[in-house]
Length: 218
Image (cartoon, rainbow, N blue to C red; front, side, top):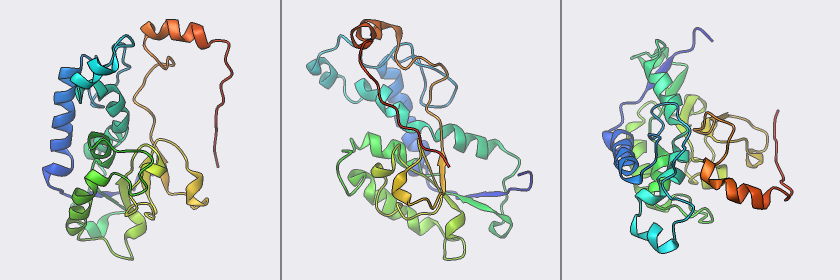
């Protein structure tokens, strides 16, 4: 829509810039050939080689897990597009969408989030609680127009955000009961290959196995 207008909250650096700077540091130490979502890139060199032992991986933490962490940065290109667009407004009264630039997906991953922890991103919860004090235009009348950057999957989403009407995710979710509001962001991969070439030997082993895919659409 050509008349869509965005108001972006001016959150402190701890919610976005500091998190990205840490991700950049991990990228430089990881050996991966792709930055943390700042440019289009498909990894040919992963941060943890297939031949690495568990002990070798532990010795290189957290850089060894950079390739996994990078998948949590799929919302970064969307945020960059919004920030670089000519649809930004300074007066919240003129806004259709209120953007909350907290890179929660990255914060969850860097906190070593456990997927089965029902509390969702427990180590990032204190920062999430601090965030609300800066959302000065959030109320019942604007709630449905606030855009939050959610983790990779809905089950990873902290309970404070699970009821939010509009958020990003890496796929649709049946958990929302068909109410919509999920903006699906693509993975940070520009090629059809799922793994780097050196995983070819693994592909040969499993080539005869059945694969199951789930597809959900509205």
